[in-house]
Amino acid sequence: MTDATTSTALSERKVPLRDRLPVISHLRRSVGLQRTMLVLGLVITTVFVIVAVFAPLLAPYGFAQQEADGVKFGTQQAPDAMNLLGTTVGGFDVLSRVIWGAQTALLVIVCAIAFSIFLGIFLGLVGGYFGGWLDRVLVVLCDAIYAFPSLLLAIVMSIAITKGQSTLWGGILATAISITVVFVPQYFRVIRAEVVRVKAEPFVESARVIGVPTARILLRHVLRNSTRSLPVVVTLNASEALLTLAGLGFLGFGIEATAAAEWGYDLNRSVSDVTSGIWWTAIPPGVAIVLAVLGITLVGESLNDLSDPRLRTRRRAGRAPAPVTAVDPSTAPADASTTAPAGTPASATDGSPS
Image (cartoon, rainbow, N blue to C red; front, top):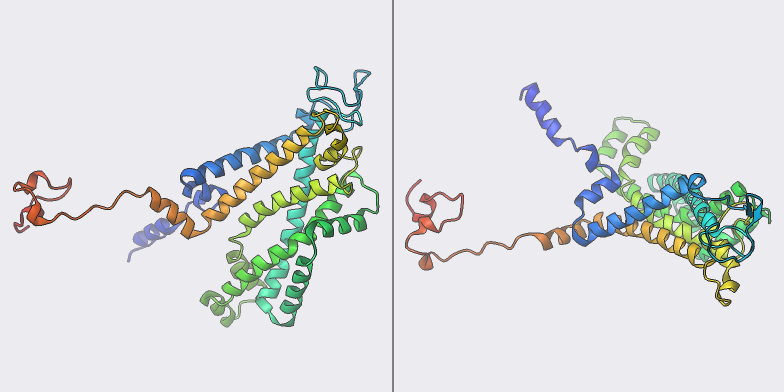
């Protein structure tokens, strides 16, 4: 084989970058309702991220601002030209706190997932590859964490970390660390299962036989082939982190109103307003939580389904054309050349030699 032929064969086998990126490759493979769900989830999630990133530009006021141009907002004020969604019981602008709350939620999600991925991948990689007593101890610890209710464990960790002092970054880091404790066992189990499978592959055995260092085997051979399910787990855990943050804030263990805007805290403060007919303090943060969780969940569930070849094949098979039914030669018309399918030689239908 010549060099030109070899280079051509290698270029044909090379997978384009768009087919290797997690979300883009799933979007290209999706069809029908699955594509609609994935696109809808991506649109909602993108809007959530844009609002969070550009919150200082989009919010009309600060998250703890109670006056503008020397005029105080008032408490529980109905929507008007100055406060488009009204004000809260504390005198804060509802729209501004909803927009700033998206930034707080995004920061907590990013910190919690970053901490969880780092610890979960490290523990899963070490436990799955080396095994032995270390792996058994890690499995027992993860099972013990699973035995506790996740929200209760997050509350205990939040109290232990903040000690009643809830500043902006202190509250964000405390909430993220408390969520990390809940998420680490999930990443540990996913990575450990993949590492146990990959370390028995022939290429890992070959690298071990020729004397490749263990650190290089773990990073270049095992880890790179054990992270296929991470995008799915990340998206599913992002929505769970948002719900945990809202739960902590609703129960009074979140971030104080003067430190940062948080949707769960605002819902807690608006509980008494609902019975008085004051709807504008509860509906905006509640709708924000529902939409953000819905968008992230749609992306996660769509990626989960598209990562399963059986579900993906079944959907594509449903769109496949109906199979062609064979025709009995005895019932075929006399002039077979006029009824032959397009692209079929006449010699193949009249029995004459080709």
